[in-house]
Length: 468
Image (cartoon, rainbow, N blue to C red; front, side, top):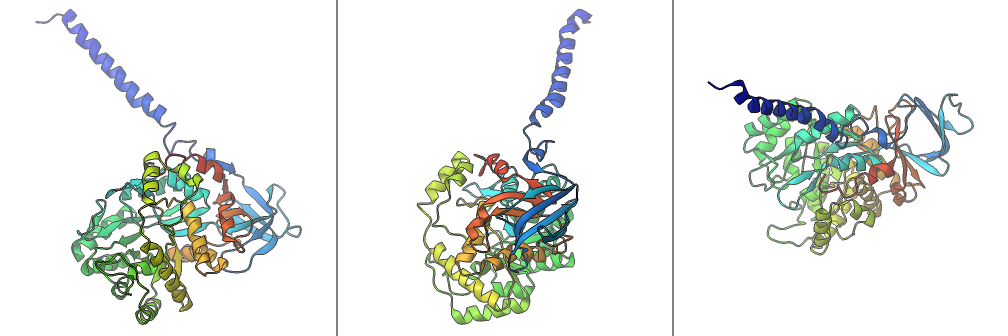
């Protein structure tokens, strides 16, 4: 029999282990939470102004409907909503309003962009989640609403949306698309592989139950699986979009797809712009293009434009945001990007103009997931590229605000500067209706009536992009 003295060292060890466990479980999470997104100071540190009643005075308003800008206006926000708009000096402002003079500036609706991601490509088969940097960068750019366009990490996106909705993380309002639905031939490891119509129906049912509000099919999906995705999503009142290749745009439209990503970039092969074993790009077959455009218009398919200028280097400010390994990969890639993507972009922009002229609906996204395409900055660049391609600035603003809100079915709440709508507003120096470069000069961003500081949001992400 062992004596009590023999047991003492063991008893001491147990007590010590219990103490260590207590410290680890209680104090360490408290210490770590000071630096984790979602802690109590995560949102407050980026807020410049939060008040019940705010008056923005002496400002130009572009309302997002395509109408001409209106000068010398004042706008009143009460409890996060636009309560009044009128000519400065003539509109009666509430006595308790916090008044801000915005002389020389322009108010636009917060941007509503529809091909967005919360990840960045790692360089090999997977993407890194950008759940820290990207929500801040979108908001800093005045992107107040996004629809994600597929993800490797659907639970991360769903939980990020929840945290933003609850005010624990600063970021845009999110509409989450589930994982990429792809065939087995696809080579990205985060894809939801669907080999059959039943696979597709089962996948849609599962992710709809988890909170996804739309679905994206990818380039190697079969026609049968696409049919299953569309029918199951539509049965639930949800929409399907696609980055197409194995199924043509015409076939997808015939099956009832709602949206096509990269617009006519997804239709390149059927329009003769690319060949099976060629890296060259050719002008589209005009007769086939006219026929396809009319078919898509008649079918009510919405196209998402994702303008990209691969030959343009990003700014030093953007380089400073990149994590060192991501920066090195970007700088190396700039010497190896082939020219055909740039030529394809020119043909696609022309087809988009023809599509809109024929009555088609075009919305906008930035696809900020590689090649130095960074959330927020890529959104501004996309609008500028559309203007450079021949669209009028006010039409581009409408597509990127009210047009996006209409597609999401939230235009009764967001997407234009109108009394009664949520106060999602972008305040910029200058006039983007004259020069779209002014869209970059963001002074303030309001989301639900709370004013955020774009400089603080951007500075907090330096060195993170590509990693966090």
